[in-house]
Image (tube, rainbow, N blue to C red):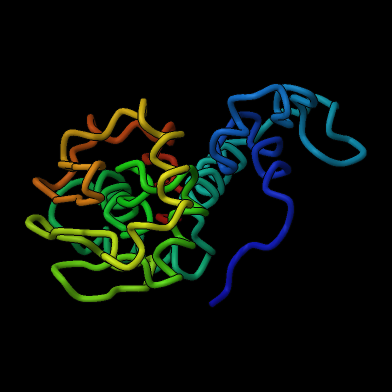
Length: 208
């Protein structure tokens, strides 16, 4: 499975804002954006005028990096969003939000999306009673996601829940973290997605 293997803090610095790719570390003084709030590279501190295309590209790159998706898969998501009824940009964010790894993260069973993806890949998660280890699996309304019974006693989950106990769970997810159970109660609306991405610029980019 292809995935980004470089330094994730460089991604935040390139976008000029925290993408919270390292979970709780991003809230501490160790965050690279707090220590070096400029783009990586020799010319990172230079101020350059960004073109219209550059603005569109940055929004697309930001969305990809937040959700941990590579270019080909992101294009496929856009194509699927374009075919759905409704607003293409909002459809795209809904598809990204309803990935299994993102749902696990949103519910508080992962300190970051990367950790949530690892939890899924390591066979700790079931959907409707069946093992699912595909992070990109699309959840549907009514799906019940649980941590496998054998995995409940692992100290890792106790540490995760303790760290994420104050996290606000979106309204479209019913999370019983004490019992490590998640239920999808509705399709997320744009108002319920707090990702700071201007999806209209992504649509403009791919529509050229």
